[in-house]
Image (cartoon, rainbow, N blue to C red; front, side, top):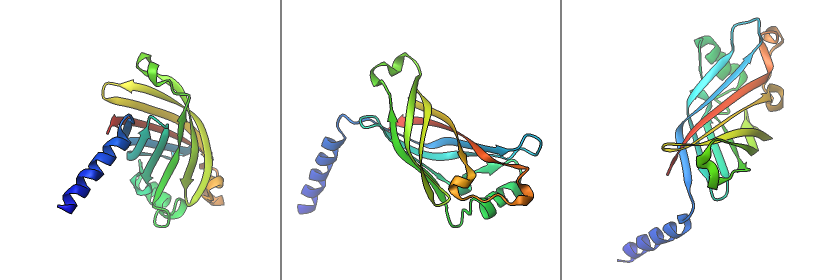
Length: 183
């Protein structure tokens, strides 16, 4: 009997806390990066199982990607990426926590909006501030958040050996596409 009352009380409390707060989430977000020099084989990867959570009331945004989820055109590139550069055995995930700003939730149904994402990106065991422009649009079943930005490999202590410096760009171009659904 005591356990039943506790469960009911907990359910009521969760309902009160969640009331009026819209939460959107995905487990099928896309994250891609390119670190190619123009004259060599493209160095690029895609990840299609990125998780994200957005609370519209506060603008809080959290994004998580398991590093081993990146897929390259060539298996050898994927192996070098995981073992030599990003060291996914030591740093198995990358994540971003921050906020979405400049959103007019009242007019979002009228078309895509330019928004700002500000927070901290953790990659390769290093956390750095990140601020970038993004686009937020309403979709049939939720929201679509997209952004493109770049990071410096050296900022995250990702060493590029001298032997391949002419093939791998120091500036890494990143694109994010998050189809967020109501939770």
